[in-house]
Image (cartoon, rainbow, N blue to C red; front, side):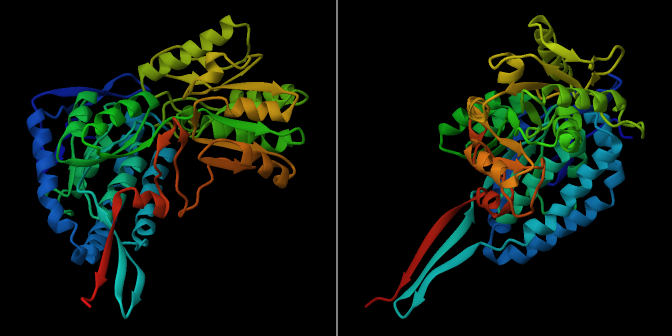
Length: 471
């Protein structure tokens, strides 16, 4: 495994005098040093993307863009094991899940390239033609998070480039290595300047967002950081897409078959150690079923193997970083202090940011563990006796990314789903996906959509052309 990683700037592998350590969250050892981009390197990256834009974005280059992006897919397929192993080391997730993240992100590429929506004729007759075109913005800055760094990076890169933009991408400082490795692999596949990857702290991201030659920002991350980015983009009206956090509610109707759905609820909450923006973060369950659900979930939790992701028996890895571990630990302590019932689980002694899946009951709406996004393996169950009150509580927060409804009667569940204020609602399932579906939130869970044709359209803007004959 490499111990030194480099940025991709203007088609060249580039280093920096300043670096920062990348920590394995399972062992707390330093995996490697990643470069910190200087202001000069950031300018060079944006300038190179700006210079490459005219040729890459040309309408005559659509076939070339498609063939080049398919070549990127082929190049990355030769490195699935390498990227997957590196992802486990820097992110913590089990190796099987890491390799699945890589393969699923590569499988998306042909689906994205199947969308051909660059021009639509609205009218064509003896008077002339009215045409609507989707045109790229220019230089796009993409900033990606640490929970699914490969999937989100590849999704943003391919979508932005397919529309005709060029891109400068900054990965999270917690998980930069896989993205930097992707840049090294694609160095000789893409034309110079089309893809640039720089690394560093939030200061690097801020310089990119504020850069006058950047015309669009695509960000996935927390609500506070998203708000800060939106404010920075307002100065020169940069276009911005924000996929931010949620606090996703699952509502179990009174007839929900607890024994049949408990495992789905469990992994809907605890996949990737709960570090998913669409993870189930709070469960509203009828008071008559609360104890049954808690007991079954706690049994699954007790049987779940938590450990180093490199161990093939591990089902749940550590939390990714100390900041997130401390956040979850504080919610855990606050719940205890509030007199909540803690069903097993809790922090694990020893090195690594390990936290066993934990079920919590006897908390009321208003407690931080219910009101705030925990983004980790601790799940509150809240009892209700009136479904309308449960819906109101599910909708009461200022976020709305996803949610789910569970019932023997899918039509009854669908009626409840219609009343929930979120960008995605699942009925009797969770984390289901369709290749043509878009994704995003309402309220403070974001602006715009990613995925599907609607997501691709967010990487461009519409231009109308009216062609008429002179009478």
